[in-house]
Length: 289
Image 1 (cartoon, one colour):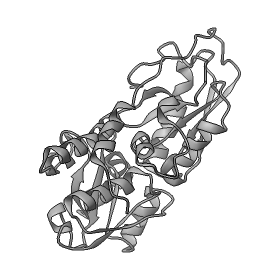
Image 2 (cartoon, rainbow, N blue to C red):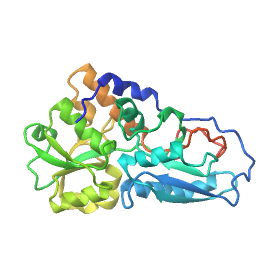
Image 3 (cartoon, rainbow, N blue to C red):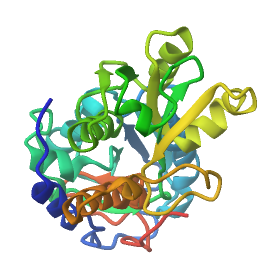
Image 4 (cartoon, helix red, strand yellow):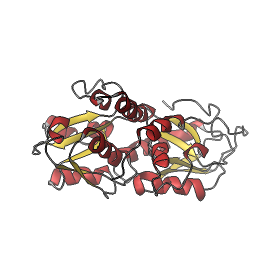
């Protein structure tokens, strides 16, 4: 696993921002056109659900009210899609993207899967905050971060550049947890199934996904929550500590606050570099909510 630089990670926070660089187009500029929303996540994942929900409603906010269709392009923690948007996708406003909020962090860390410059994308807006949580199956001996510091356990993940890989890697390097990361699952739907089957002991995934597609885990007390990656405890998870609460030094707090900020920023929609067509009148608004 790569060693993590606190300074490099902290500086990644300055890269995130929303662009208002699109020039205005006539009211009917996208009439009778189709816009593709390229989703960097696998079908059936929580991110897939969010992406398709956005695609269903986004067209009404774009001049000419075009049809918006979702297209999945999973791989490398959503960076396969990011690389496509950066270097291949048309720059006429007909292709948008939905990728990991860790893009700037991984760029600064030199992830070989990153073949783009995060700041050159046109960041259009975000849906909402996205609370990733690490949780374990009820049969695992690891019930908390304290347990994970003493007992080795397996945790499923997708691509190396994804948040669900980065976060347990950071906990291993900084907090001394003993997670053995099993990566390569196409999406969190697949890693969640692996946990149910006993192939791995734990996963990191969005609280939205747990709540919306795995409610039986909660009702049946099948899981134990270790940590949530937000700055403050989510109202639905008041008993689960945030990653910031585990900081023991100012440097660790700075590092963990970065991940909390990523969760607060949440999932966003972006357009390729050089795209100069306005997609809606409120371009550059801080949220799509």
